[in-house]
Amino acid sequence: MAISRAGLDRYSVSAALRALTGGLYIGEYFDGNERMDMILRGPRWRSPEELSELPLVTPAAGVQTVGESGRAEADGGATTLLRLNGAAAPWTSPSSRRKT
Image (cartoon, rainbow, N blue to C red; front, top):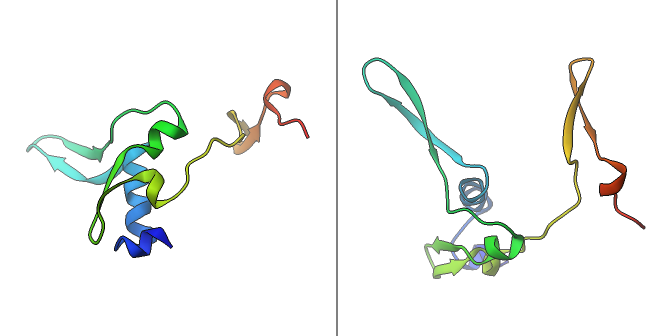
């Protein structure tokens, strides 16, 4: 697999992808009065193709793109998260459902 040849494991790739997508919690900062979460965020991207072009530093293969280490693609998932009796209930609008 490409990630193992580059000297990475699935945990480090997962952490890098979290940083490039929603942000990765890396610790806490305390200024004497307040505690603040420290979140590592990568650059913004708008499509799976842009995500695939972002750099990823690897121990054995130097700098590669995310796309060289794996595959990113858009997938039709839940577009809204609703609560039903307090529990999360995924829901997609009829216009966003995949046609088979």
